[in-house]
Every structure is written in structure tokens, then in C-alpha cells.
Length: 160
Image (cartoon, rainbow, N blue to C red; front, side, top):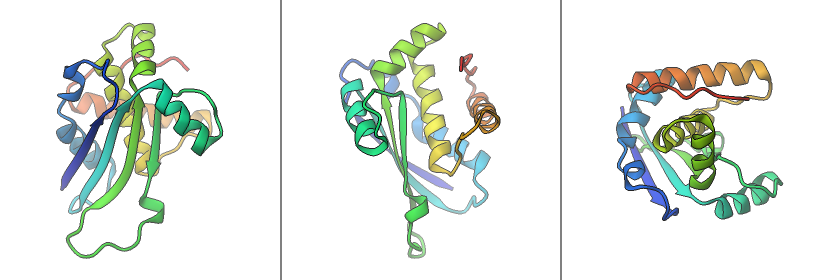
């Protein structure tokens, strides 16, 4: 399996170490944990942005005129059959650095851990996971924790 991550940095206040995290390796590990077809190639975009930009997207696509921590725009449901050998574009994960900073402070952990947690959450959405109820949310959060542990990170304590 091969995963290509297109990293877009649109939050100048994010420290360089967040951009320098091993995103390709981590996304590859996480996809391998939850995706049944290991022979495929995947692509996705990870956009690190600000509250202002994510609020516009949240309003435009979800009718919620407020910032949020992470948005995921999956393309899998609308995907046409791919030509042989072409990677599957999973979609876009957009994370607000402003909100991630606040949540990291509230949770008492590093910003890089918060962004990683949110990136994993977004990836699960791209792969078809959802949390319409408490039981599904608990299942998704447990999977996120397993994914972070698989790359040597201690998941943050999540407050609902």
C-alpha cells in the first residue's frame, strides 16, 4: 500500500514541528489498520488552517456559522471506478490550528498530539466512519486511540 499526503499549511501560527510530523507514515499505518484492501494506493489532502477559514467552510457545507476543529470531505462515495494502477483520492481533511491550540491547552497536552488526533478522526471519516450516536462515537474514539498507539503516541483524554 502507498499513501500520498498533500500537506497544505494555511495557519502561519502553527509551529514547524506540526508540519514536519511523519504524516505519510502515520496515515499509511492508520489506513492499513482499518482498510481491507491493502494492495491499493491512496491520496488525501491535509489542510492546516485558521478558525476564520474553517468557519466559512463549516457554514458553506454544514450550515453551521461557527469554527470547528476538523472537517472531512470524503470523495469515496462519489468515486468512479479508477483506471488500473491509479491511486484512490480519499478526500480532504481540514483542521483549524486555532481550535486545536485551544483544545490542546484545555486537555493539557501538546498541540502536535491534538492535531494528530484530529487528523486521525478526519481520516476515519474519509474511510466511511461516522458517529451519529454515542455508541458509534465511542467506537470511533476507541479506533482513534488504537491508531495513535500504533504510531507510538499516547492518545489524549477526550472530554465529550
